[in-house]
Length: 235
Image 1 (cartoon, rainbow, N blue to C red):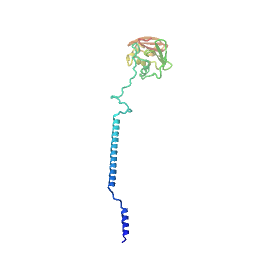
Image 2: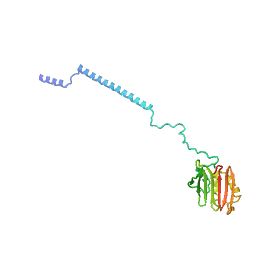
Image 3: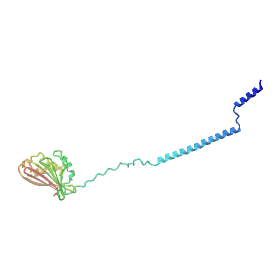
Image 4: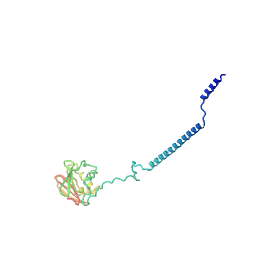
């Protein structure tokens, strides 16, 4: 065998193998592992700090109240809205204000009804007037205090032949003396002397009576009936 060939082969084999790791190599490896462990440890501390900050922020959010929420409603709900109070009618009036006249008149189911606004007529002095026509021959009129709108006088007028002639008194009695049958009885017994309107056709009649301080009067002239209700303080 060729000794030179064997040495060359050995050299080739030795050159192909990795060099043995010495003390310096082991030291470098250990140092790298230590640095890696240090980085891992530092990273863990950073993560722990960040986790603590997140927990603290969440806690603050839970404690601080939300100013955008609607305020809590006290037990029992919101207090009811107060409605404007209407002062009572004057003692010397008919006990009703002009604003309530339409509703009181229309509580009687039989015609005629007030179906639109009541025209007012300003007058000099304390009292103003109004007139509401149901048709060409029957109407409702009155006087009220222009400061308080208290009613002091009411009048219904119609021709005896008008279909409303015998029903106007029903409405007027209800407005002045609500649900008081005695008002209608006084009209029939005193005003008509127990008779009917037809008994006074082409005749003249004038009579008065009082109910609860209200002065009533009936006048029939030229086949026109006029019934008035006057409060103690009426003009």
